Length: 434
Image (cartoon, rainbow, N blue to C red):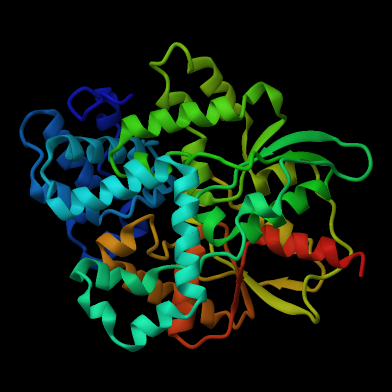
C-alpha cells in the first residue's frame, strides 16, 4: 500500500467516476466556490490526468488537495460507489513524495507532530502534561494578556488560540487496564483511547467504559496506546500509518476480543481499513482483516448487543437535544441511525433534528490550521444551524467536531452544552443509583 501512487493504483478506481454531478450539492468546497476543480469530480479529473501522464504533481494540484476537507460526503452521494477516500489519500501521498510543499517550517512541524509526538504516546502525554501546566497555572492567560503571543511566528500566532484545554487526568488514570461488569459478563471488548480524545476528552473514554460495563462487557484498556495512524494516512504519510497499524494489532490481538471499540468518528473510519492498508504484508494481512471484522464504533456495538435503556435522565429537567454527525462517522463508517437510537432511549430527552446534520463543521483533522478561512465559514454555518434548533445540548461523536462546535458556540455567545452521545448515556446509567 505504501508504494501505491496515482500512476500505479488500480485504474478502474479512477474510471468509476461517471461525472454525473450527484456529488456537487454535497461538497462544502464546491458549494462555496462553484468551481469545477473544487468539486469531487473535478479533483478526480486532476488525479486521472496525473495517472495518464498528462499532468505532473505541482503546487496547484497540492493546493487543491489541501482545500479538500476529505469529508467523504461525496462517497455517500455517489451512485457509482467511487472510492474517493482512497484516491484522496493516494493523491496526498504523491504530493508528499514529490516534495512540492517542502519548506523548513512545514517540515519542522510535520516532523515534530506526525513523526515524533504521534509516534510516541508517552512523549505525547508528556507534551500534553506540559501544556496542562501552562494552561492551569495562569501562564497562558498572562501571556495572552501581555500580548506576548505577537512574538510567535505568524503561523503559530494564528493557531495558538485554538489550543484545546488539556484534561486534568489522562485515560490511564481514569480507567483500569481491565474492568469487569457486575453480574455475568456477556462480552470481552478492547477500548481504544485515541490521541486527542485521551489528552482532551479522557472523560469521554471513562464514559465509554461505563456504558460498556453497564451492558455486560469486560473492558480491556491498555494504559499506553499508540496513535491509530489516521492523521498520518490523511496527510500522505502512508508508511507511518502502516507501522502504527502493526503496533495496534500487536497490542490488541483481534482473536482475543468480541469487539474492538472506537468512540471517535475520524479514528474509527481509518481503523476499519487496516486490511487494505496491510494487504501486501504477509505477516499481518490475515490479522489486519480480522481486525477490520472486529472493529466497532461504540454506538454501533451498543445497538448490536441490545443496550438497555437507562431508567434515569442525565439532566435535572427535560431537555431538547440535537445531534451533529461527524463526517467520518456518517460518511466513512455509515453510522447514522445508531447514535440517534441511543439518544432517543434516554429519559428526559427530546431529539430535535439538526438542519444539515451531516454537513461538515470545518474541523477535518488539521483543516482549521491549513484552511482557516474556509474552516471558519463552515463553523459559523454549523453554529447557526445548532442555535436555530433552540436545543440546550448538542451531541457529537468526534473530538475534532466537539472542539470545533464548542469554539463556534462560544464565539456566538450561545450557552449550549456539547456532549458525546455515550457520555449522556453513561451519565444516565450513573444517576440510576442516586
